[in-house]
Image (cartoon, rainbow, N blue to C red; front, side, top):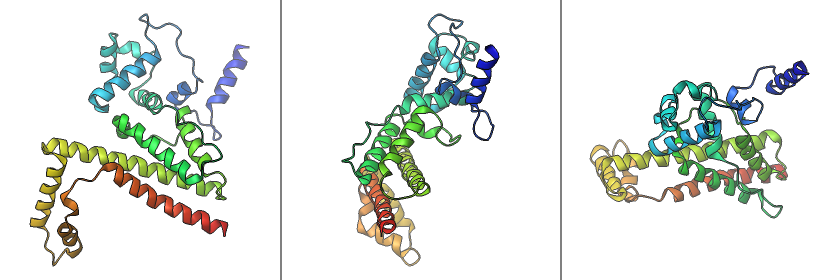
Amino acid sequence: MAGEKDRKRETAARGEGGSFLPAAVEVAWGLRERPSKGPKPGLSLDRIVAAAVDLASAEGLAAVSMGRVAKELGVSTMSLYRYVSAKNELYVLMQEAATGTPPDPFGPEVGWREGLERWAWSMRGVYLRHMWLLRIPVSGPPATPNAVAWWEQALVALDGTGLDVGARLGIVMLVGGFVKNDALLAVELGEAVAGSGDAPEEAMRRYSGTLRRLVDPAVYPQVAGVIDSGVLDRADDPADEFRFGLARILDGVAALVEGRAS
């Protein structure tokens, strides 16, 4: 019986190509047994992940280490390795916990465009609530339960468009990449402005004035025209920039959907 149980667990952990899943992915899907009793009463994987998320939210991802998380929990560093094999595994579980499940499923009354818009805005909200997520290195395609659930919902939004699976997958990757890049840019620009000590409007005026001194209109006539227009003298709402970019991407998707239909 024990041998059969081990064989089933091994089969579940293998992919189509025969390679084993990363330990963190196994844990997220419940394919790896967790210790029933830890070296310290009350210590658990959930507590470890929650402490790491709290630490990243307060001080950034760079503050997260096995030693620091252990200190926050009042346990030895070695005791954490009973639950998490490495920091990269902890990152995956932190990402899974902070991302959470996607918003409620779309009903049949929601068209593909509105569905993708809802999905994109919801994902943007996740990134802005947990900005440290943007610093986690990409280790592979979606593989944990919540990540797959978000992926599923975006694909559901495109169901019925008449696009083939490859096109729908490409659109999801395109929109998801835009959401993450836009959030990262917004965060980095916000950090840069905060570091300057100026209010956003003053920081933009300072930047515009600097460019005006550096840019020769004879060499960079288009950039000079942008400066002279005054558009760089004001700080735009990041949400407006996101709305504009998302709309242009979805305009392109709409053209693809209409083209396939005709």
